[in-house]
Image 1: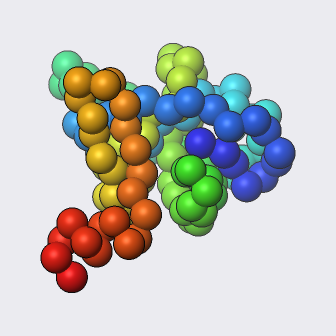
Image 2: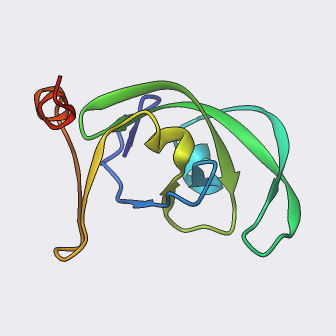
Length: 115
């Protein structure tokens, strides 16, 4: 994952299909000068609710630009966690035995969908 706001090296990201939202460490958001756009309340997988800050960013995922994504700035995470808000915009192939995730190109997606 890369950010539009600055020229940081790409960062690894955890793919979490159980997360509604994408979480990014606050320190990283501050480093890239991300715009804080408001706050919200989120519920953890344990059912606890907490207030969080939202940031508006454009993400680069494997060469694809995803503009205007609202992400949660989380001071407790150390890595980028891609939630369904981002995952629903891209086509992934999960190769479980190889423990790899691949983004598919449009030609492959069309072929797999029989279009």
